[in-house]
Length: 333
Image (cartoon, rainbow, N blue to C red):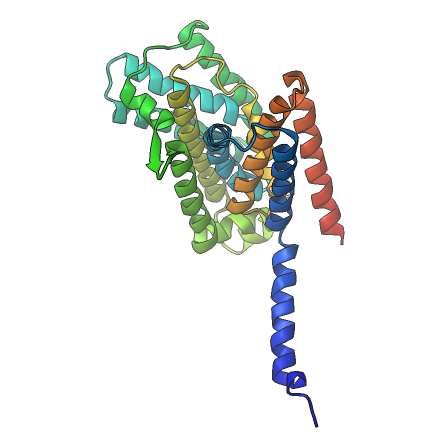
């Protein structure tokens, strides 16, 4: 007698389940998630304070503005570009909102002003690339210096203080959920992650972004305006970075001209560690979200384990290089 479990139909279903499981495990995001999980387990065992609710929500709040900017960076890197100016733009956008508030502008308009600043700087980056034919590295490096110089020039090096409660609410408020409070910036991050992911995977513009990064010349010959796609992604990167800058300033309650200095490293690292390929054509918002979480947990873990903050950049650089090496090895297989 033949065994009912060995029928072709059953074998096909078994193979399908096996294939789906292998596909899930092979996804870049799964590897990033496992790394994050390993870090959480280690820090939970090694320290007594990592898993406290206060520390966890501080991590979730602090990684929010980096993650939001990294969503935009992901779009840029998928097109085989790079935006080095995000740290300075984050600081400039927050400073713009703060200066408008001090001048008596209502909170909604001041927030809008900060977002417009980020959008305009991002659009300028896109125009320099497409119309000025500048390499992304040079164009955005120049913007990094100009935006930071504007921050220092407008304030004379002094921070802008006395921001109203309505503005600080955006970065400091917790939404009650049971006995805990969920940071409002985290809610903004998750909503923007969903919207950006849908834009990237469910619209024709998302398809075009991947196409430009995969093969720009072939995309142009197919009739797609590649310059328009690039201007769009750099503009979106500036806008999302502006949102991150406003939330960061609202959290701190003060706008310093040096705010977000060096954050471009955190943002790029979040995108790259999350699986966005610097060669272009690959990347997901979920991966970026996990990458941003890894970088913030790493920063928090170094502090809790007593490692000097002076070593942070060295560790971040090592993580970035390792992520790129693993990406290259994966592509050669």
